[in-house]
Length: 178
Image (cartoon, rainbow, N blue to C red; front, top):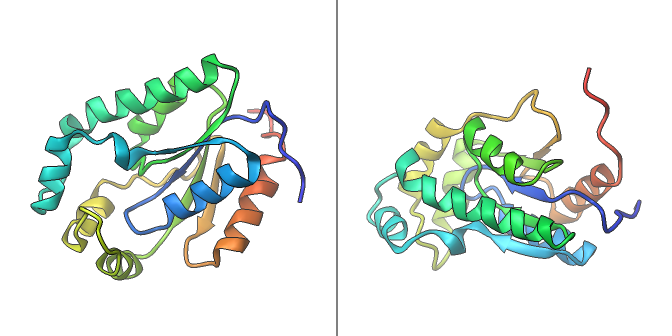
């Protein structure tokens, strides 16, 4: 596996609930010795309560949460460090907000079918996100197809394969924009 330098850009592991963002994000961060940021830990209590009750979050609900996450990325960058953020980043405008906070930010998009997501979320013990909200995640999802700095992965692949693909991709410079 190619090594990633300390100057590597930050990475967001993104996708709908149940795609494996946290698992892959933790693995990448551990492998590279980077800070791992779990976006779910930054949701205000009101958001968590809504999700527990099966109410989907809207843009207004996510605004402060995204601003906080952008601030976390800015702080990491300000220290000259890098981090891995596990965050749904469902919409292009959410990703743009995160990119503005961390120029050079990359995204690993874990693609997953609705059926697989429902099954995974239903089998996830102790999480506040019920399987009934998976459809709202897919309704909000704007796949990052064609965006710069995005690696698309098949979320049903084993973790070791996803980790290797992500690390190999991070070790390569992004092609210059046309």
